[in-house]
Image 1 (cartoon, rainbow, N blue to C red):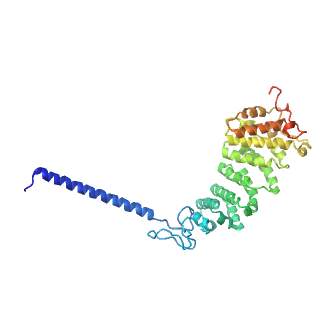
Image 2: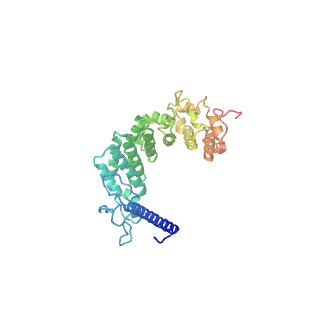
Image 3: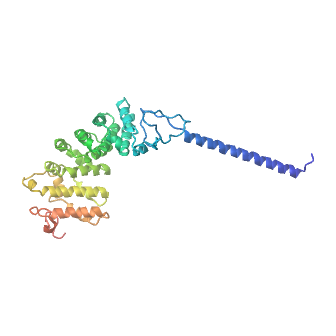
Length: 367
């Protein structure tokens, strides 16, 4: 054979190394092709399905590009044809909201309606110009979803109305749904529904014709305020704080029945955001009951009323307030001091800090 054994072994090792190297290179090339194909792959556009505004989508009126087509390029004017947000930034209408609203008009199952409404909400917040171009009929269409039998659809409809309520021209139309929203809050004990409905109401100026319905749902609002869901509690007490400034609703709020443990809402262990809102509520109630027109009438409260829990002879509100003066959160400390000042002001002098003297109804001499 003419070759020594060591030389043959050396050649054999070289061939094995070459084959291994070639195999490794082939595997890397196949992996590269797979990744490249995945990046180029684009899902087809379907106008009847919920649309994510962050994906590549064609300009209105164009069909989706085939998978092997190149990515969208800038137009002759330099305007991008890609993301809906980018197109609006350059003054072009992506048509996302209109397509979603058209899809909502078609017959859809509950899940599809919920997802479409969720997408509409996101689009309203991100595509301001397109949202402003919507019509009152579009708001009515979303409002009709509040009558759906599925709670998830109702919740997403409430969120969509909340988004549109940030646009001034739609507020009056959305106000028309206030009574329906109050009805949902008071008759369906669903925490997510409560949060969505209350957020919407807190973003609207409630007209006077809603006040009779507000009186009817006051017990439900108090129950939500005393529930164990922080988000719902905060939204409920914000609404009640707003209503406490309405002269014709103040007595209804103060005479509303509460749990014997109501003042637990002012324990230092409660979340700071809830403590702050409850303290604001207490201050507004204190200020309202000292107003001249309110003191002109001799009101009678039931024994388990909010008035007795906060301002009655047996109330422990003073103890709660004094413990909150040293709360770790500064805004809670400041608001607790405001309530103390409000309670100590004599009724005949109003709430001028320079004229305040201790009121023995709430703070004992030793305190």
